[in-house]
Image (tube, rainbow, N blue to C red; front, side, top):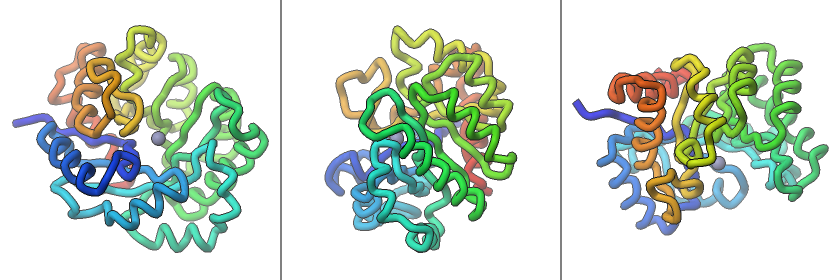
Length: 262
Ligand SMILES: [Zn+2]
């Protein structure tokens, strides 16, 4: 039996034209991809996803949607009051809030505004019993503090594109978060991220591509696509000395559980 994979984070709408996207989904299916969480992180991706009708049976892959404002897009927050969010999440293909979070790496928006909007989406996810997909870069201290204070173990949390070290990973694991690794774990300079992947219980690990960004080492310089989750997931199995097929099955089930899928 061939391995099957779940890409827990892909911006399908940002990949290219509708034809490009359909071809890319076919190629992903051939690589064993059977599930994708499609991320809409601003107005543009949300509208393009709606136009494309990306979800459900567009391909042989199960595609689910997520919406929330990326920390660099928090300036759009006034366009998304709770009533509008309720309208978006009335579409049952939308099962997750995100990506939302904190990014102090580039000073594109202020930390204060990012924290304010992150708290808004966190409260929304808690009140509607939705999973939260978190983006965090150079802000893990604030993230861990906020999650420790606010979360109350009541909503599922996925930390996407984990870029911290093993101490941070274990702290987040203790807070009940699932940790999702993307292509940067395969880069030569990513020893700390690899150590983090070794320190976690396998039940708390997810894999993702962050399509069309951050291709893994063997595809650097090319546009990323969900099929590369096979390479990333197998890479993590190898560094953990786990059987690739058993590990990819486990990661698939972890992702379904994290997203509340049956
Ligand atoms: Zn993303």
